[in-house]
Amino acid sequence: MKIAFIGLGNMGGGMAANLVKAGHEVHAFDLSADALARARDNGCATYTSVREAVQGAEAVVSMLPNGAIVDSVYSADVIGQAPTCALLLDCSTIDVATARKVEEAARAAGYAMVDAPVSGGIAAANAGTLTFMVGGTAEAFARAEPILSAMGKAVIHAGASGAGQAAKICNNMILGATMIATCEAFALAEKLGLDLQTFYDISSKASGQSWSMTSYCPVPGVGPQSPADNQYQGGFAAALMLKDLKLAMEAAQAAGAQTPMGARAEELYQKFADAGHGGLDFSAIIKTL
Ligand code: NAD
Image 1 (cartoon, protein in one colour):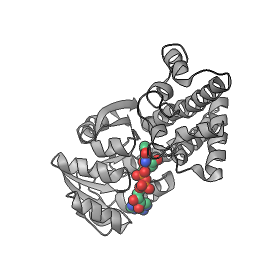
Image 2 (cartoon, rainbow, N blue to C red):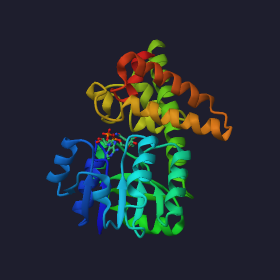
Image 3 (cartoon, rainbow, N blue to C red):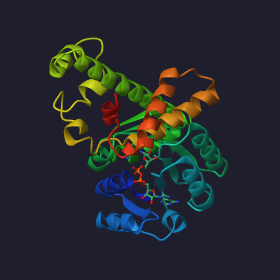
Image 4 (cartoon, rainbow, N blue to C red):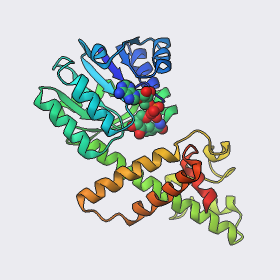
């Protein structure tokens, strides 16, 4: 299949390479010359604009930084430029309202479009083991599923347009809040004189257990290998957790939902980023407790 790929950064670079490995003809574009060079090394054909990359495409996949960029790229250079038979798939993490607005504009112009944000970081993007949460019609999901499967281990239909983004931010709001709660508990356990490995052995088999504890323990040397064992380098940057918490708070406000724990997690990650730690893995917030 001829697939245009827009946005070849940390995530998109590996995803485009996996589409090539699956036998697709990938027509790639990014504003960065370095990203384009890496895409060429990975077997993509590269172009000098979005408009050129989407000519004749059967599908367009995007992996861009935020909603404003997704909106401008689709309205200026994809809608009306790609053939209307092309399926449009935006895999970026953006706000629900913009995802729905762009899909409506695409639908009005005759395209089928899905929002398909991902869970899993750069390593999963490179390995082709992302989880995709997809918003769109059943027909659009059926068309998207085989394309996304080439880049992921799980592709789940979340519901109508925008539902993928809704699932993503609700999931990451749980993650942000449980990570902080887990960090607090380990910090308190230490002050109360508990051995941290012993506390882990107890709590990981008791009701305090969570993914933040048993798959991504914020304490070095405790639990499975995690960014804590690598000075909090790599993993999922605190700045990206903050981005997702802000999207969750915006959505909560628009929907009139009460999210006091999510709001507190956003404040704490904002403080952490303001102190210059946004590039560290999000579990490094334990250092502030
Ligand atoms: P990134 O900044 O590494 O990549 C974004 C790329 O988009 C860059 O190469 C940039 O040059 C390009 N770009 C920006 N504007 C463009 C335009 N107008 N036209 C073409 N290209 C343009 O970011 P990333 O880490 O790859 O993240 C991409 C998306 O994936 C974000 O929405 C992010 O929230 C989401 N995400 C990231 C992770 C992660 O661990 N990095 C995990 C899950 C989801």
